[in-house]
Length: 600
Image (tube, rainbow, N blue to C red; front, side):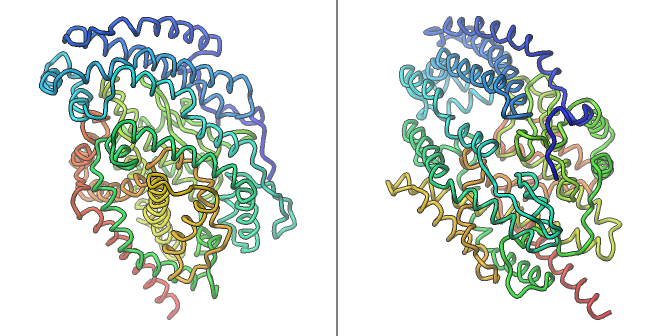
């Protein structure tokens, strides 16, 4: 179980970042060019009351931002390959400083544009030559009250020098400095725990191994909880500062407004999931019976309840499975998948110092990238499909939208990834029988549990933490851990799950909390994906075409409206009810299948 060094990984399992910037030396050249170009950002200051100046300014700003994006993505992804390499840490710091410097130089653009009348801005948005900026100009007109004076915007821009330090510091701690106690597993082998290995250990059939991994993981956060609490509290207070400075009602209002999403969607999700906790509790009681335990612990929630059904396959076989599962999306989509697997889009294996988890990322004008830490589990096959969903969404958006409209809102960012997961699951279920079918049914239930129920629980933690800050209540290690512990009790206690004391520190290991009000979109993403995938499998080509309209739309209109292109309306009750109906039906089938097996 020894973790390899980066230079021990085969080249075929590494991504090709040279497609972004050919070399570190070329990065240096581009950095200097961008630095020089950025000095011209102020040339439109005081001139943004005429259409021709506005258009030239917006295009120039796009040019500068496009270069900054390439520089940042390359440096950050090089750093993510091995977070201990000082060279790339320094490059990330340099590009961060340049981003802050140029954001200060361009800080006048937003307030001076917003100083124009709403009528003028709406008129510009309708003009042919401004079509690349029609949506951003419309949003600007709608949000005039949240745009400050030029001087105030410059001050806020300068806070970028330190506003990201909480997330950066947590990332360094979480990927490099945290120390997990080693332990001997049930076979007498010494286990050096890592983030990637932890997920694998929780699926072990040995309960003692799961418990030891759980205690090692959360014991490490408990030992550093005051430090992590200080970082997270600082991040929450930063969010509060920006919300108050821009005159939003609260932090949630600012977060949803930034994405042009009604707060009612967040509220509807929470209300729906809280009213459906009885379904979760029913499933957890079933899981306890299947595992043969009198009580269920939190480290028992990930182990497969069907012995031997998990597909522990090599990466290449996992890729073939994903390609077959996504065949309903058409030949064009299939060709893009082949490119992803063979043309340096993906960094596959875990190595020492590599960023934990998985993500898809990239920059405009270059194919997207995927970071994995592949382990031979069914969960990791789904991770491949998930991250490639992100990648294909970015690919279609970038290919079909101008730079100013290509970046889709985070609100829809988890939809395409989850559509792929649902299609993969449906593919596997088609021919599955016996134990394999029961395993996949339970996998779907766990997808709901971790993506809908769990992420909504996380969202409620975020909301409560920010509400404490808004009301002037103290935020520290004790209050944050108590908030999380009580929420965990609400979600699990009546199902007979033991609320292990160490779980109170779980909030401290969630990196997404440093990007406030992100996690609830995983839940709305799965709900949307269930509807889209069903349409694709039921209606075929017409639904695929509707789905591709969604993928190609990028950030060209409000995200709730973009989802409607694919047939999902999150402002109505229908998607939420449909999702929970599928959860209940799946659980009933699994219970009935098990009862029939018992009678035989």
